[in-house]
Image 1 (cartoon, rainbow, N blue to C red):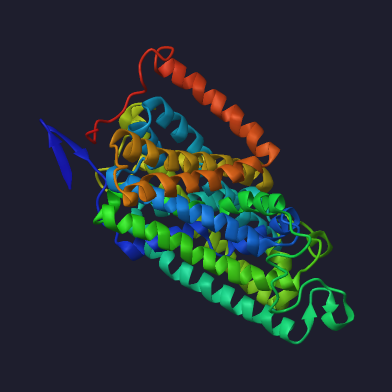
Image 2: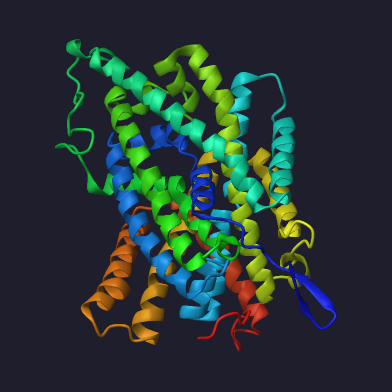
Length: 464
C-alpha cells in the first residue's frame, strides 16, 4: 500500500501486527535468558539480593509503561519517547530525548552481538571473533530487511524455547536446594544466610536500599525491550488499544520470570559471585555448567546464541523505526533516514546503518555498552512520565476529577520518582559518557535550529 501526493508515490509503514506479535517481539528483545548474564553483576551490586533489585526495577517499569500507554493513545507514532516529548513539552526537548534514546536503541543490537560472540568463543575458542561479528550482523540485518511481521514470526519459537529452558534450569536449581545442596556444597555444614523458602534473598539485616537501587539500574537493561515496542505504533493494528496492553503485559511477564528464577539462583549462589564465576560480567556459561553440567551447558549455550540474535533482531527493528521518524521530521537527513522501501515497507536504509554500527561490537566491552544503554533508557523513561503530566494535566487541563488526577498526575509522578531513584544510583561511567553524548546532541541541535532561534523541525502528524 502506498499513498500518493501529486504524481509521487510514497511508501509507508504497514499495520500488520496484533497483540501477541507485539508481546513476542518484546519478550524476544528483553530476552528472558539474559537473567543468566546479569546475575553476577547485579548480585555484587545489590549485596546478594538480585530478586529484590528485579522487584524495584519492575515497579518503575510498570508505572512507566502506564505512561507510555497514555502517550501512545494520544500520539500513535513510531517516534516513541522522542515524539511524546516533542509534542507535549517542546520540539527541542523531544530532539534531546530522541538523541539520548539512541544510546539505548542503537547500542542494544550491539550488546547482543557481543553476547553471542562470548558464547561462540566458549564453544569455538580457536575461531577469530571478527568472523562471528560479521556473520551475526549480516544475519540480523537480513532478517529485518524482510519486514517486521517476519521478525515476529521468527522470534515466536525462540521465545517459547527460552521459557522452557528457564523452567528446566529453575527446576534443576530447586532440586539441588531441596536436597540441601548449594554452590558451596552441603547446606547442613554451612552457616549460610539463605535457605530454601526464606525471605532472606529478598530482604535481611544486611540489605541496603541504595545497593538494591544500584542493582535495579543495571536491570533496566533487562527491560529495555518493553519501551522499544512503542516504536512499532505505525505497524500495529488498533494501536491505541493493542500497544499499551502489550507493553504492560510484556514487562509484567518478563518481571515475573526474572523474580522467580533469580530467587532460586540467589539461594543457590548465596555469597560473593567472584567466588563462583570467572567473569561476573558474563556469568551464563559458568552458571549453566555449575547447575546442569557440561552437556546442559553446551546445548543451552548453543541455543543462547539464537536467543541473543532474536533480541538483537527486535532491537534492530526498534531503532530503525525511531531513526525513520526523526528522519521524517527532518531533524536528521530526510532522504536517508526518512526512507521506506516500497517493496518491503521497512526503513531499509536505517536497517543497514544500524547493521554497520553493530559491526563495531568487535571493539566493545559488555560492561561499557550496558552502562550506556542504561543512560539512554532512563532518559526516555523519565521524559515519558513528564510528557503525560505536561500533555494531559498542564496543556489539556485534565485535573478536574479524582480519576484524572490519579491517571495523569499521580501515576506518572510516581513513575518519574521511581526512575529518578534509579538516576541517583547510576554508574559513573554511564553518567559520564551519557553526558558527553548529550553535549554533542546540544551542539547539533544548536546548528539545526540556528543557535536555538527556532524550534527543531517536526512532522505535523498530530493536531495539538
